[in-house]
Length: 306
Ligand code: GLN
Image 1 (cartoon, rainbow, N blue to C red):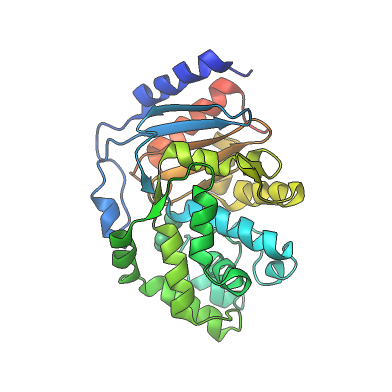
Image 2 (cartoon, rainbow, N blue to C red):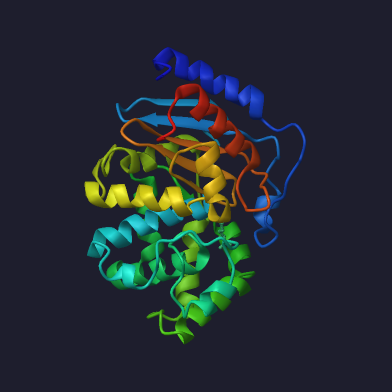
């Protein structure tokens, strides 16, 4: 059911027409003032094919805040450094069923976060990566920007979010208290918020995510082993959309990772990486228009993995 190359460009244009928001439905996160300023009618979508071609439509060339999409890349780096053996004793691989920034579960489960894509788990990944490479957020930015040469931290957004990081600091201190943080809480939160503040376009995020769809090989060469790429896809499918992962697997059927900047990176194993962006979010923190567009894309291409 592959729509074929000429068909894919037209399909993406259809999705822009159908899903670009006209009204400011949904919400934007209060803890990141910068995101509230983004025009609610923004909608971009890009598909990076394993063959090297990139299809783009709508605002696919406009940089947006990647936020939690960066968590896939920090996890890829952390697993690349120790194959996962050390990391997987510090963070589980189960869907959380609670909000991405929840504190409750972390205390109940004695400091071992449910998965690496909720904030508590991502902080552990960042801590792990600091031990491995030092400049954790710098390495995440380098990995994100490698295929395109584009991507940068928005310093204003970074400073504003860092100044409002009470909840992430609380998570980091709780992790430390429960014996699951090696570096100072403020250093870990600094690197974590910094990697979230990277801005890139849909087209460039899709290029950066292609290694996840292509057995660990990206446009610039191998990023992770085929085994790690497979595991990253599994964690994306089960945990990438927070407490809506089950619903998203049902509607779309693709391993995906969302961010509160309104972006979603989705993987079609062996075929392509898709990035869609539209800033308004549902109650779980996932892009409303982005999720709807991915559901239609999966429907019309037959790309669901099921
Ligand atoms: N920087 C955001 C936070 O820590 C990222 C959250 C997200 O994208 N879900 O709250």
